[in-house]
Length: 130
Image (cartoon, rainbow, N blue to C red; front, side):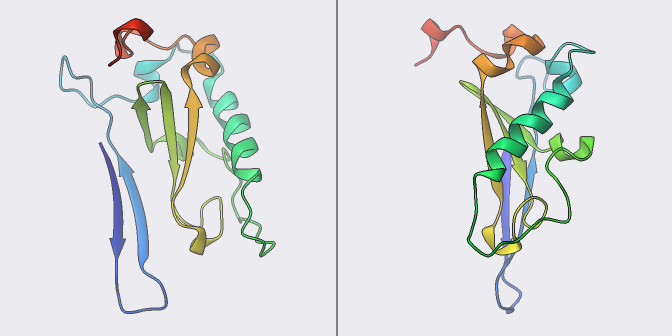
């Protein structure tokens, strides 16, 4: 479940926030990345590399440089969702792009995640998708 929250406070632009909760539909338990990928697989480094590469290609032309770099701390990846074909990472406005650029989403295909040994039970086989 991903919540994209917009609050109009009467200012120049609304305040935006994002929150994501990924559940194991069998148990109802909220999942963390540690529950989905093999321990010690190097996933945080990969997520850092992949998200930096994706976000670097997005520019609003203002020359804005974020005070943070994508992947600079593990909390960057706490806002994620599983998709039928991989996962999506969400970054709050101002975190890794200019505030006015809004919430940033980075989609990572399951094929790119394969070396990090994702729990296959959480994704249906390709032939089983509708």
